[in-house]
Length: 197
Image 1 (cartoon, rainbow, N blue to C red):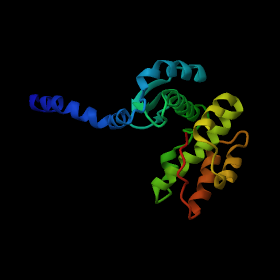
Image 2 (image 1 turned 90 degrees about the vertical axis):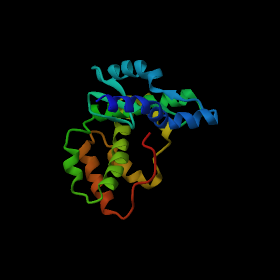
Image 3 (image 1 turned 120 degrees about the vertical axis):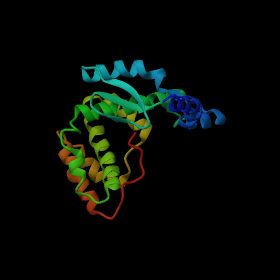
């Protein structure tokens, strides 16, 4: 209806400002903002080089992939300089590509996670553990990229060393990640608060 279109048009500037609250805060603090549109073309070519097929780069609220598209945040302000934020975009895109390359989606993850009553805890553990496995796979094939990711994230916590070693074995698959996940879900500890990248 005309009323709903008018309402949407009037509300759009306010909604855009709310979506860009991180950019507003960064600008107020003098922190450079790195926007996806600034690196999108380069990331698209980079991902095509890695995968041998196009993977579209699209903006989203958080980083994820549907195996045909790589969704990344519209802007990044995690680091105080634009170059580090550009490297963060590249690291995020690399890990999402690795999910498609190294079989993260070769199983029905929804079904496999449904066995856990605390789904959010299972998802949090899965994100950390699968990032460990993918780090190892990337390091084996693309050590320079792996080094960039480690430089941004830092090493995994010592408390996760046994899991990291298990998931770093050559040929580790999503099945190995899920086996480690089962062990982690049986423990009383929750996943550590660590950025996967």
